[in-house]
Length: 334
Image (cartoon, rainbow, N blue to C red; front, side, top):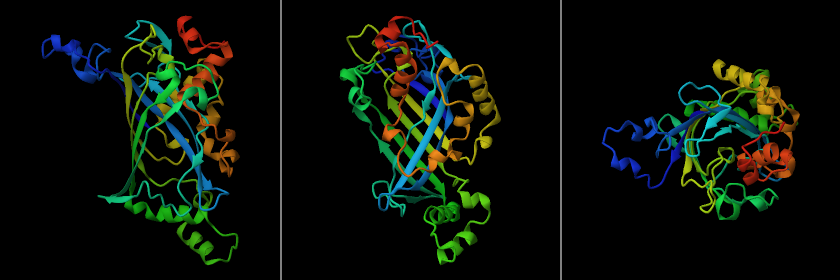
């Protein structure tokens, strides 16, 4: 996936006092990064997933993990620190590192009436409009509301559009047969499998249909940015982040752009900011691990988010609340 992250500053009227050609106010090209529409970061990484049959009748299990880096929007280089233009402070930048993202998805016959596919030009298209809304303290069994307003009531929006080329229908048939192939090697369905899906790659489901995705997200300032949604907090800045990202399906890590792969490996080789992670090789090929062939969600169904991972990897090892961490100069675990 690749895209950009922007600042959405409601009621940003300061620029109205300037001349119409005032460069500091021209949206994502603004020379003043505090302005509404300022392009703060690039956003580049990947999500790897496995789809398998669930023990529950007529249900599929989606198991996934993802790592995505915030980058310099001009050069594409991974940024490890960022000077916050609202506070003037320099903060450490932690990537998205969601190891656990598992859930039942749809049904075993691929029917999902809430998100129907439709023909759209040369593609089949569908969408998923998701509006997360939950209490951080209840969701993650913690007492710290971190930088989230309304006593930790996290709210965001994630809007997805999925496109699958019509000529991928052969691959979908192959996926259907592999996911539901019978034990009887002489069955007609088994024979169809070998006709539609020849070769070891198809047998292991080691390829992916060539889909593309458009993803937009609106959500709070990230915890590592050192800004709070809470109006009474001294670190309060009115606004949210807007993500606009595109992605496409790749079969393996080696299909990723070479420049990105090298930047990612260098980040790990340089110590991954001292954060405890599963390591470069595990992030590199998570779909090949046996745990992704499990028939129940991993980690007892407790999925990761940016806030839960930040709490686990940055705050807890130091025994700090979010407010204490921000007020003590943004230390990272040693």
